[in-house]
Picture: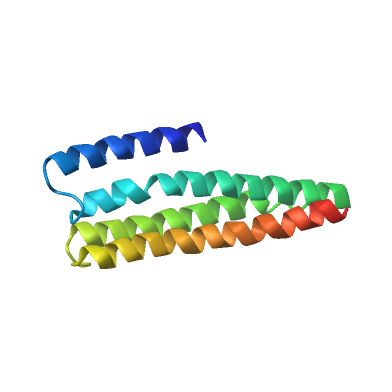
Length: 129
């Protein structure tokens, strides 16, 4: 969480500097700076889901060895999709700011919803054991 908070502070500084040069909010870097720290928070929440997963399966005595590789793969996929959308925005392939904004925050919304579902599922399983 410390990295997530530090990245958010850096993003705010970048956003303020770009606002002073009147480049925001239509500039793609503002959208990336505003949404990038959410990836670190998503990784932190994913770590909590993996912890609850391992706790649940340890209590049940059925620990699965694939939880950590799956966590790393899921994180990698989300970061790569996010980077592709950001690069497409920088290259003006995604030409309008609202489309880029919607695309980046859409990726984050899907990622957060998936972690939320995993967290609720394993929290309920831990509570029931």
